[in-house]
Image (cartoon, rainbow, N blue to C red):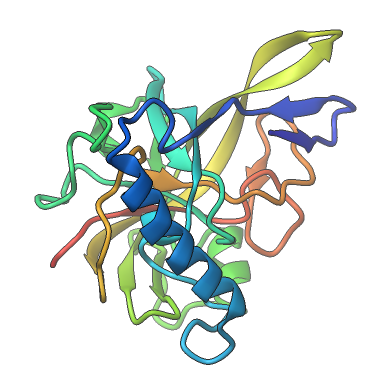
Amino acid sequence: MFFDVGSGGSGILTVHHKFGGRKRSSIGDLRAHDGIRHGRMLSAVDLPMGGLGLPSDAGLYYAQIGIGTPSKNYYVQVDTGSDILWVNCIQCRQCPRKSDLGIRLTLYDPKGSTSGTLVSCTDEFCSSTNDGPIPGCSQEVLCQYSVMYGDGSTTNGYFVNDFVQYNQVSGNLQTRSVNASVIFGDPSIYIQRNATLTTYSSGGVVERSVHESTEDSRFTPSKSSLIQEYKCLTQDL
């Protein structure tokens, strides 16, 4: 999967089919997945543009990115139609540690990355995200967020800033690894509704429409960016 970056090159993610390499029994899984996927595409009432909180309902492909310092690998869905990127957090007790394909899923630990920092509500990003200053804000108060998906799933928590590692096209059939500073959410709770499918391959979601990036820049939901919004989710079923 290619995407344009502002520095004149192209970013690249290697995508994998989440049912690839599975036995014939996966045909039934693929059929069930396809039914949900087509239903989502055709529905204008049950599934509004807010999307779904469960990536495995519609996501068919996944890729690997690096997050934090030292960098740890995360497998994320890239075919969900979602406009955010998120990974499960270490606080989540019920989130899967391994996918149905046997892939070990990494959980993000804010304390395990030397480059990860908490975002204060005084940060310009926080004011921009909340369309103005936060009442009662001070340097010690964290920038919080709350999101509700179209299927009723919700996530609440605070924002963190950390590095995301991905590949950028540097020449003919050549790539190089680059870093980008991303502000993302580290939730205190994630409530999932109407969960029907097992997570086959991923522990997160990455948005497919990517437009602009520069090293050591911040990406926000209000700007054309590599990651429009990045959230770390915990789960309470």
